[in-house]
Image 1: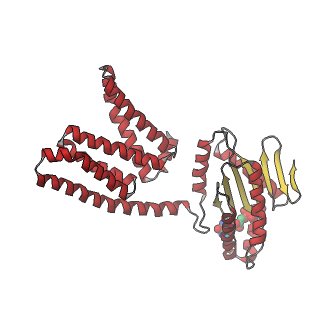
Image 2: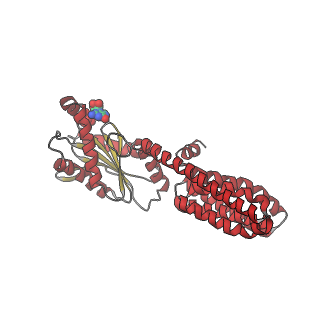
Length: 343
Ligand SMILES: Nc1nc2c(ncn2[C@@H]2O[C@H](COP(=O)(O)OP(=O)(O)OP(=O)(O)O)[C@@H](O)[C@H]2O)c(=O)[nH]1
């Protein structure tokens, strides 16, 4: 329950809307489904089961961060078709349901698509409106619908731009401009949740060597510049399936998806040579120690990082400026100028 709540806490507004709507669909459709089942009204049981399975599909996949953009359009289509059919078959009494539907569309999809959904609803309900109310009243209804959509659009674009800035503040390290520890934990949780054993995921923990000495000798401002330059160097050599994070202080992590241990070790070696070659002449020379660990089945985040940390400390103890890897059987494998060694 606690982990479910913490997952929901990390969701964006539109993802929360998806969760809330699919949950509400479930809550409201389940009781009539049971009644219809008892009454043996099989057609309606079939329709209700379709809605319930869709609600469950959307809720489950939103929680797991899967197909999010598809789910947003899918949910919009379900609610817009649903509300249009309600007005077509239920008459003008249910027309007020269009307002929350428009709000939903603007919170879930881009404004131009939300307007298209509204246009779709307006076309579908036109025969009911024309046959039920005088022309002037019909026009007023359409005017009110598009007017409300305009206001909702202004409000939701303001909300999403604020949301974007807040997300950026919460996920980016201000000194280096790369993702922070919070983002690392979210990404690692996603990787662990999706782990199937078919592909390998590697983690490299990187710690700058003797950073205290560097700060003491050259000052904190230069220390900060080294951290910034180091982040730029890593970003410039990062492969497509990898992301870099600053975990804090002078400690960084690279998360690599679809990557075997050997490829992670060779990226570590490339980091080592890149800082040697690309370092700014105005900044002091420095080295880094690295530890690599590949995710094991059923492993938790702290166990995975602990193994990569142990390998990194092994690099430190063995003279620094090297990459070590935690191996399932051999325990530690060290990479140095003379190639891969074992212990
Ligand atoms: N300039 C600067 N220094 C930082 C920052 N964050 C942490 N530090 C410094 O990083 C240093 C880390 O020192 P230690 O943990 O002793 O590690 P180390 O000197 O690198 O020693 P080894 O890890 O054994 O190589 C401390 O002096 C911190 O003050 C930062 O954002 N900017």
